[in-house]
Image (cartoon, rainbow over the protein chains, first blue to last red):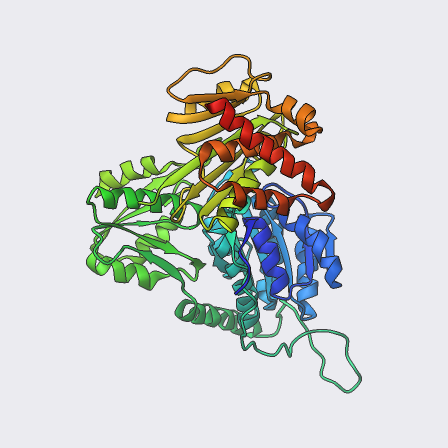
Length: 352
Length: 182
């Protein structure tokens, strides 16, 4: 077993990227994710990798696109305003079916907003933040260990589905230190990258990576192909954590950092004799619809808690059993506004 | 529910408080076999002179990662003592530098005080180890981690050339806190 370390969530992301075989990083500094480029700028050169501080976020995402087209594992990271700048490139990558990992340690907005922990990028992340009607896989870690494990998984999912994958977290998980067991990269069977462009020898087949399809019917077929992949992801890649849901009469649902706070509130409720559980989606796209349908077969009350004004709650409403009631408690970010467990316990009591 | 213990190291930037918190958390998480979470202020909040590092220690999972009701507080400036002592729980412990915090905050908590910075400067020989003197004292006052495990965590963090200096700083801090408490 690997040694137990004590590291920041952001460092865990960088460590996992290296263990996953990523040797190319392109980024531009922004709080609260700069520990990721800081770590990789130090470590990648030692491994004959490349760390490039790009001229802008737009530059960085297009470098990721280019590197990915050659078949290497590569990554970029940023925080909300920077991720907005990357959306054009993400759309091009989705259209070109290019793997790549994008980490968003999100902060509050809209616009320049602030640096507080926020979950206001849910819509942008799961509904296709750029143009053209695509999805990317979105993973939502809630601990330093998951920052590591899910970053590692992100690289595999990206290669398996030929898609960009986003790791979406916030400063709570990114900036805190806790125990990490840096497990080695698991053995995974990955599809051969027979599509990469690396320069062509005479007589060999030409490879083209592109998102432009002008032929009659080509683009329609391409879109149906992409959406066919999204259906496979929905079927095979949903992940969630269920905590004390078996006998629950109220199920709290939250992702990432807020799910941690909710857990403390749920334990308080259990001590008070209230049967409360937690459903924490780990994949935000594909959204674990079936898990919501399953738990609301028995438990008819859901309380959705988010660090925004209500985004995931829309997907929750679409997923639950028809006779279930969905309540929402939102905390859009502001200085020092991270909800405390007692506050969430009050909400649990209100809807129980 | 598992037992949760919250520690806050506060003072000014440059006093090494972040590192003191990190070492405390590493001692708990790696050497003592407990669970620990460490966090600190960052960004604009971290600029402008003040500094704060929080450590939560528990025998079970720590879901809420920030300090709420603080069990033990270190304050190395008057500003930090005034600002954070209000979060101290009843019966908690406040450790202050007696020369830097001249106005003792009042409340239902125990105040332990000795000249931490001067001890580092004059008795250990280098002011730069103020944070390790303070850490030794906090280990003694909180009783969450054994002296041996805490010392291991300190030594794992410092460069070889400064092992003895930091060992001395840690142990003087530990002893002084016990004496000041008595």
